[in-house]
Image (tube, rainbow, N blue to C red; front, top):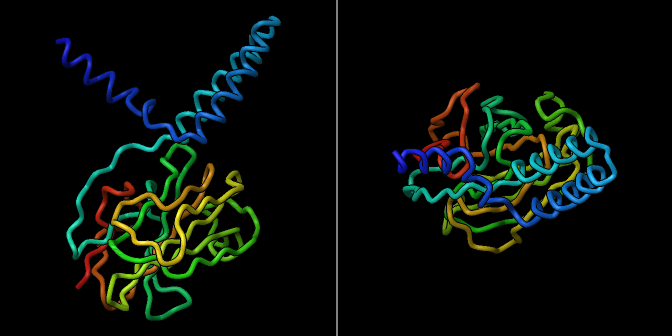
Amino acid sequence: MLEDFQRTLTKCFGWVFTVLPIGLRFFSIALLIAVFFLLFGFRILGGLFLLVACFCAFFFRNPRREVEFAEDEIACPADGTVLSIKTEDDPNSVVIRIFLSIFDVHVQRSTVNGLVGEIFYHKGEFLFANNPDAASKNERNLIQIYRPNSDRFAHVEQITGAIARRIECWVKPGQELKAGQLIGLVRFGSQVAVYLPKNAVRVMVKEGQKVQGGNTVLALWK
């Protein structure tokens, strides 16, 4: 019975031990404000900021994902819901778009074992991340990722939303990556797009499916 209780606690609150340093900073600020209001008798405001502090810690969680992906597997780079799977501007590429709500994990991960190519940052607007125009109009950051000794690619694009106002990219051109490795973060609601060579992959997810970064197999190389 004690073991069951411990497993339940770990499942419910285990994320507390995975909070990123940046999340601890936001948590500390909100907690200090909450304490200030509570000390001076403003209980409602103090309670609200306590909730904000807890949400900041929850939002910036980074759950451990240690899946070993096979060479023919392409890892999902983000947690969320698959918005669309289609060919867009480039007829030779298929684009998989994933919507991240404010309750999803917001770190991004590498899609394959490979090398970082160029990184393209574009300033833009802050439409809601599930808006069809967000992909072309919002602030975004494209990280090119290539398979070693190959022209095959599995690029990851970070896209802001109406609430998200900052993109963090944790990799640089020429860096070696392992599938599932952390590559960045978009603060609060956002979208992530994956670009794959259309005729070289078999997509394994479908629109509306819930996916997990570093856990879900997004596609397979043919």
